[in-house]
Image 1 (cartoon, one colour):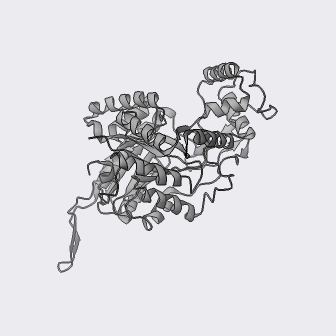
Image 2: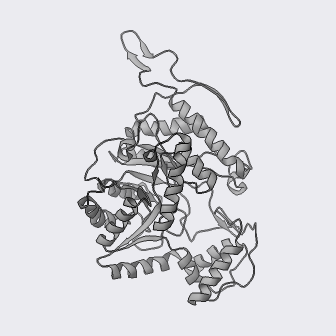
Image 3: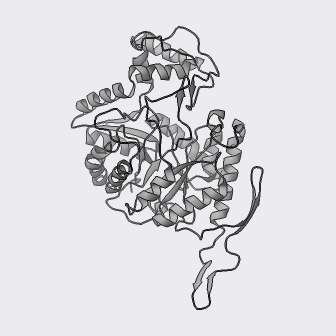
Length: 438
């Protein structure tokens, strides 16, 4: 039997994948936009709907970076509202383990699992930078090496809190006046970052443990995912890179006593669909031109070069100067530890192809994974999954909220015809959608 493909929908935010200035784009804040995209995903029987988070507005040279979307609602609040207007779609929230306490994390995620009837997921992310830390009372940040130490401890405690109630701890004996079994919810944990004890304030949720997603790509992040995540959200959407990543992460599972199918690998991908392959390529080119405007090309080059490049022509050559390491020209984005080899690669590609600065950025920022007719896209996605480059995909549309319409209406039926994607939901919980044990 062919492997079944898992699909998720991402409502993108603060990056240049989202073309918020396109006339077809609507609000990035109004609930109607989230509802529209989630309902499209549920119509396509997707596994889950995924929201990222933003803990501080990005800045470039001290000013808000408004070439991308600025501002993003809090994930769990939006997903709780979506739980009321969807019935089967999983609801995945990104919540930072660095700036949240385990008790609050456990309770908020278990609450979403209760109100959604077992559809909650937590995308565990970490942070260590002082720029984000300034928004929080700790006023600073973790040492980079400690962020996963705290994340691992947070996840362990959150899971112990979810287990603090057994399935049969709710007695609800009205005649005897007994609501819960004595001892329900008791917990105690002494760790490096947390010392907590008491009673967890919420009975066991439908999934027991909401699904845990992880998005790290470093060696430490991959081990963290292999040890405890149910889904890994990767950036390796290309076929060969996907196979390499897939093999590496799956090989780590036995060290943690886990089976290969206990962790689903779902890279972020973009899809461009048109009537023919040629039309799709034209459409993809237009989208890339929208995603990397001249000013955006300059900002992305500044992130790499680490200095002000506003005097440069984006349609001219690349800067000749060496990059500045450790610069704070751009705040709120992941920077480059060693930009020199990347600059060298950009220069080599620009020279070989006769590209301008903007053309180089466009080609370096190529995030269009599947481009073609519906048949071409369906066959390519299925090939990725059957050949173990992925277990499924998190689709990142360039437009919200209508960016998934073509895929759901034209590609999903072809995947169903091939017997590699569900025709209807067969269960109600996200764990069941993903084939994960409770």
